[in-house]
Structures are given as C-alpha cells and as structure tokens.
Image (tube, rainbow, N blue to C red; front, side, top):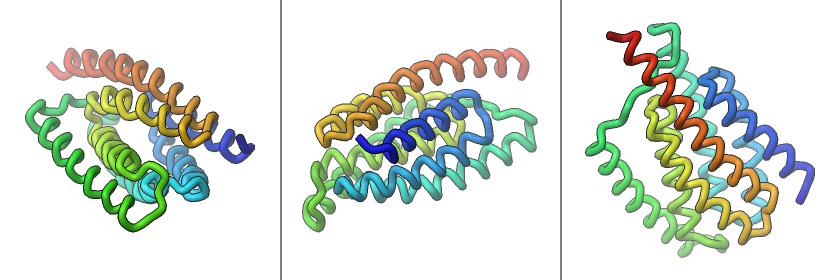
Length: 191
C-alpha cells in the first residue's frame, strides 16, 4: 500500500461521487484519477488496465463535451434509458472485443491476468460510454464490472484499490437509485 495508491483511491471516490451528482466537475476529477491509475497499473503489469486508463483520458474529454452540450440545450443533464436490444448488441460486441484484447495481451505481453484484464478493460469502456450518453443502465453495468475488479485487484495485492472498487460497487448502486429518481422527475416534467 503506497501513499500514491491511497491518493488515487480518494480522487477516484470524489470523481464517482460527482458523477452521481451529475456535476460537470466529475469529468475533470475522473481525468486526474485515471492519470494516476495509468501509472499505478503499469507498475504492477496490468497492461490492459493501463491502456484502459489512457483511453479513459479521451473518454473523459468526450464525456465532458457531451454533458456540456446537453447542459447548454436543456440547462440540466437529462438522463435516458438505453434500448434493450441495443444494450445486448453492445454487450456481445464488447465480450468479443474483450476476448480479442485479452488474447493479444496474453500473446504479446507478460500481463498478470490477460483475459480477465482484457474483458474488464472493454466492459469499463462500454460503461464509460454509457455514462457519457447519460444512460441509466451504466450503473448496473458498473456494479457487475466493479465486483469482478475487486477480486482481480485483491489477487494482485492492490488492497486499497480492491477496497476502492468495493466502494464503487456501493456507489454504483446508489448512483443507479439516484439517477432513477432524477429520471422519474424528468419524465413528469417533460410531459
């Protein structure tokens, strides 16, 4: 356990909390958190997670843009449901891409847990994309992904980070509940 890892944990918790509150600041704080975790994951040879953090940097810029565009139009971050058929297609595509990425990590790197690392990286990207699109289902996907992350990080000895992801599970459940309440209010005010 390093002071750097603890700092990354605290910044990450702040970022997710701001996301739940639908604050534009979430994208900036999350950007700082992913930079910190990119370095940490590289050091412990979780290369899929390292690359994921690099992609998250771009996704945070994209999310900030999407939310700011929405806020300019509606003066609020309006939430939406994702079509079930579309969600399943995206999940299946993500599984295939995760397997390909995991096999690539296995073949070309000394990654610690390449297949799992690849799958989690791809599903994290999907969840982040869903967040940027303001789909309420993002939180249920994060619950599943974060539960698996807890095990992987504990296996790698990243105990503060495993604890962080256990907290993320709880935050994601709360995020779903919070966004669901907002979505109900938005539906009432829309009609």
